[in-house]
Length: 67
Image 1 (cartoon, helix red, strand yellow):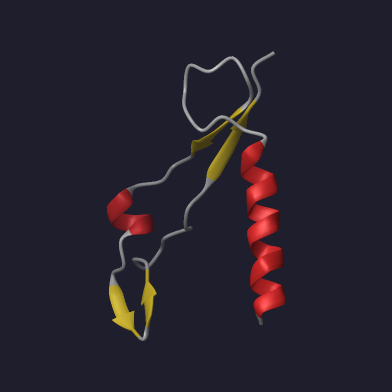
Image 2 (cartoon, one colour; image 1 turned 90 degrees about the vertical axis):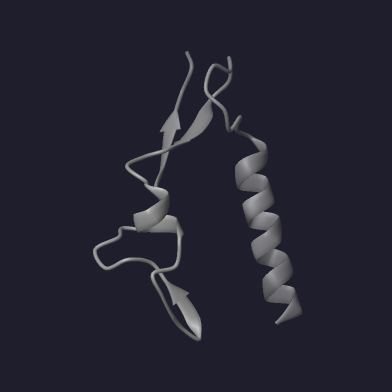
């Protein structure tokens, strides 16, 4: 379990390290795409595991290349 958690941390760190996460940057960026806090982020019900609202597609990210 610890190895799996460490591998996930390494993968996510590698993924996000190569991008700027804010608009107006000269490098490639990641931006939120069709995401609202109430529908996609905040938990709607809590049945041991928090669940987003029904019909939510989850947190979606758009890759923007600045050429």
